[in-house]
Amino acid sequence: MTKRTRTLLGSLAAAAMISLVPMSGANADGYWQCVPFARLMSGIQIFGDARTWWSQAAGKYDTGSVPKIGSVLSFKPTARMNLGHVAFVSQVLTDRVIQVTHANWSIIEGDRGQIEKDVTVVDVSPNGDWTQVKVWYDPIRDLGTTVYPTNGFIYPDAQAIKIAMATSKIAMAQNAVVSAAKQAANQVASSVRASPLDIISQAADSTDRIAALIEAATGGGSDNNKQNPPR
Figure 1: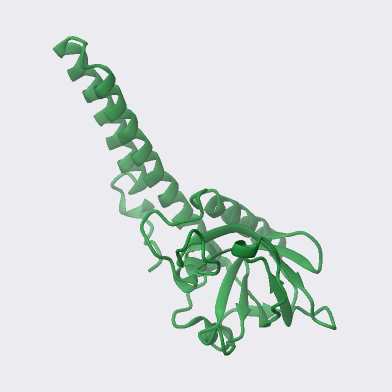
Figure 2: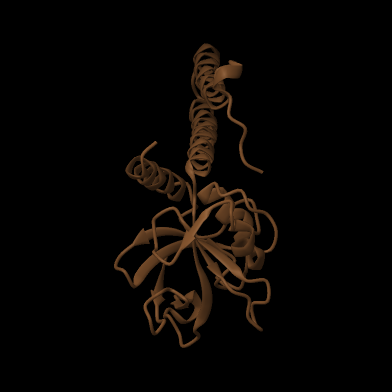
């Protein structure tokens, strides 16, 4: 696979994953930490605290100081952020301005552990090498004055891109199942005045659609099409 193809696939995977992030910013399932969210979005299989990602990436993933869509920006630990932080790069606006989609950064409506989409990050390092950044902070609706030290960017390899794309496919299918289930419930609720035969027919049609979606999400029952989602 060529470098250009990997970049294109990475961008497509990033776009697919970002489209699945809840618009409200909060994860419907509860509290998100930055590490599992960055791993889910990028497909980069690194585990452990965010502060260890840079050292763990050595020899396993390419790293550098150039922002790329689909990469992960690694933050160094500080006194106030002793576990470090990792953020998925969702847009590259200029060589000094990017947007990230990340979790557990801002306190939103009094809660931590939330997801923020396309948050602005500005490189303020003297040499323009992304070793110091300012990050948009939702409570003040501004970048603020805090400067955060960073290691640089961790780039996903072909396998990581494949994992991210597989995860996005499964997640989209799951979202379709939920949507179909809601539609089925609404149809049954709206047909309470219809005849019993009409209600049974509508319920059967909805069940068939949900079953088809579930089959598609699980690879249609064929072992050759099944994907193992990342942990």
